[in-house]
Structures are given as C-alpha cells and as structure tokens.
Amino acid sequence: MPPIRRILVANRGEIALRVIRTAQEMGIETVAVYSDADRAALHVRRANQAVHLGGSKPAQSYLDIGKVVDAAKSTGCDALHPGYGFLSENEDAAQACIDAGIEFLGPPPKAIAAMGDKVEARKIAQQAGVPLVPGLQEDVDEARLAAAARQVGYPVMLKAAAGGGGKGIRIVRDEKGLLEAFHMARAEAKGAFGDDRVYLEKFVTRPRHVEIQVMADKHGNVVYYGERECSVQRRHQKLVEESPCVALSPALREQMGKAACDLARAVGYQGAGTVEFLYSEGRFYFLEMNTRLQVEHPVTEMRFGVDLVREQIRVGQGETVAPVPEPRGHAIEVRVNAEDPNTYFPSLGRIARINLPGGPGVRLDSALYRGMEVTPFYDSMLAKLVVHGADREQAIARCQRTLRELRIVGVSTSLPVALRTLQSAEFQSGDYDTGILERIDKKASNVPPELAMLAAAAARFLAAERAGATAGARAGAAEATPAWAALGRAERLRRTSP
Image (cartoon, rainbow, N blue to C red; front, side, top):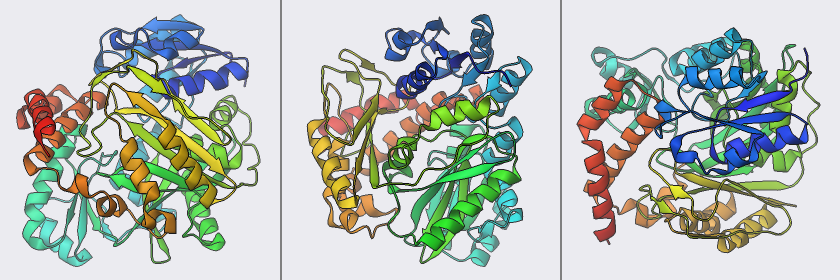
C-alpha cells in the first residue's frame, strides 16, 4: 500500500493533539475538524489545516459522518483517525471511509459491529474458546427474567446489549429488586444508546477489571502489550489505571493475552483494540472488546516504550505489526475530570489558572489552556496524568507528588479523589477490586439521594447527546428528567449539600 501522507483527525481535545503529534513526527500532514465550541481549541491550532463542522453539539459536528468524511475528501486526506469516543466505534463511519477511498485507522466495519453488540460479542468469544461469565447470552425479556436469574444464581448483573461507558448496568442482589432494576436498565439503555436490549450475567464477587492491549495488522498477525488494571472506578467508569496488574501470575497473564489475540483473530480485527476481562479468585472472564484506542493507552506506552498511534498508522498503511518490546517498571494513569469530587457531578466553567507537574517519568496528556471554557457538550475529562517508575512503590509515590503539583483553577476536578485513592492502604497493598472507591471515598457514598438521582439523569441525557442517539432516545431521556431542568436543580442542590 502507498504510505499515508495526510490524516484527518476526527476528534477533539487531548486525543486529537495526541494523534497530531505522532503524525507530525512521521512527516504526515494533519487536518483537524472543530465545532463552534472548539474554535479556539489547541488541536485546531496545531494541525496543518482545520475544517469547521458547525454547531456545538456533537450531533451537529463530530458525530455527523457526512460532514466528517466530506472534510477528509475536500482536503485530500488518504486516512482518517477517529481517536476514541465519537465515531471511533461506528461501523457506518468506517464503511463511509472505505466507500470514499479513505483508510479508516481502526478495525473493519464488521468487527466494530460484532464487538459493539455485547450479546453477539459473547457468542463470538465463546466460539473462540474465551472464558465467559455465566449468564444468558441473548437479549432477555421480562417473561424469562426471573427464571434466568435463578438459573445463573444471585447476585446478577443486568447490562445494556449496545452499551458501554458504564451505562445501562444494574446489580441485583435478590429477586425482590429484579424487575425494577430490569426496567431501569432498559430505560437507561434506551436513553443512552437508542437500544433497550438487556442481557443478564452472574455478578462476580470482588472482581478486578483487567484488560489486554492488542494490535493486529492486515496480514493476520496479532500481538498484545501486556495488561492494564482498571479496577478503580466510579459508576462503572475508570478513574485510575496501572500496569502491570500485581494479582496476575506470568502464566495467567500469558493465558489472558492468548485469549485476547484469539478473539481478535476470530473477528478479523485490524489496528488497536482492547479486550476487557473480569478477574476473580484465579480465574478470568471475558467482559467486552473496545474496538478503538483506549483512553488509558499511555499506561501501556510508558511501560513498553511504544507509540501505539504510530503502530496504528503503520498497520493502516499495510505494514506488519512490530515486535513487542520487553516491558519495564510500573506505570499509573489518573484521569482528571471536571467534576465535583464529592458527588461526581459535572463541573462547568472557565479555566482561570493551570500549574503543571513535571520531573522524571511524568507525562500529562491534555488540551488545557488558560481561558478555556468547560462546556456541557463533551465528556468531562480534562487531562490524563501518567507516571512511570522503576517499580510500583516508586510509581505510586511519583503519582502522589504530581497530583499535588497539578492545579486547575476555575472548575472543580476529581484530583482529590485520585489522591485519596493512591494514599489508601488498600490501593497501596495491591489487594483491591472494583469496589475500592466506594470503600475509601465515604463522602461520595453520602450524597443525598435526590441529588444522586438528578445528577445521574442529567448525565444520561448528556451521554445520549454525546453518543448521537436518535431524537426519540434523547426525547425519552429528557422526558424522564426533564434533563436540563434537572441539571440546574442538581447543581443548586450540590452547592447547598453538606
């Protein structure tokens, strides 16, 4: 294949900058796209060219496949990098690129579709010999719900079939709360994804969330770059990630890596992807596959000394995957979100001042600048703080030091939560699971119920907007709140709550 000479970066914020920088190092020109809200954004300034898509809402700009592909064609791009979020796991966008003769720097449309449907993904994983959490693979309806839950055994988890990002999930401890949780999961799935299908699986006690980074080329070769531990989560969304996972033996790590590669081959995968597993009591189970570059990919880059975006571009232009380097030391990433550290409710405002950390083994991926407006249109993540140390103890100490140095004035952030987590005895011991944040962060668990309900409802509406759900889905989410009224009401409650 001819080399890629110009890439349209179909994203915004820190990931757009991330792709632009690697492309520039490779001598590849870049084209940025931007919405009304992002006219002054850093990715617009750093790219060789920029195309205005219009609107501030994602559906008017970054999620409009026609506008994005037209921007690539009109600027003579031969490749499109979707980043993560927006169009990164959209099979229609991948197909539109193919139809336009543009290389989509991600997996083929069929792989995106297969892994994007959680029910179908479980079937493919089972056929590939990848261990599954016991459960009902197909979409479950109300008539079969109780019998299926009894067969699997409580506690069980209800999950959106078209879901992701921790939305459309309910944990049910006994049959008494099953039906209510089922209707809530379906309503949330409908509001966020425009698809109310729900499936059921066994809830694994004290699970750890461990994922494998894979890279596949066009010649059938698949490699993996170790694992990432992602068990520090709030509301099923990751906050702190580290590599390696201290709970895994070398033999188990190899088994998980092989399973991840087998699954990638089974769907004809190409490019960067992540296979997520639950780990508990010496066993691992397939959770889902993210058919894109993960937010936490810098953890792997720091530990393995690789540039995964460079590898995406290389395999996109037909080269074979490079040999995997030997890993070294320990890496930790902290997501810095614009949100209240006590309620996790989104925080909006203007960035007044920034103090950045530094020193050996420190990396900050962000698109922050003084005067930047944090709006409700996009995800709340402002930056990713990544550190590397010779061992886990040094990495934890280094991460705590950089968290104290990092200052973002103008909006509330999740920095205090991350620091409390790294200071906790449970995290430092390495013996923790996905419930760690609930145990160490007592303030978050004492949020008034009304505030938590309104915050969750408003967040679901914003998620539906960002995900480009159908007008009907957004209307349903709005009707359930009404969402924007709830947003203001929840903000007032947040300010007056203890």
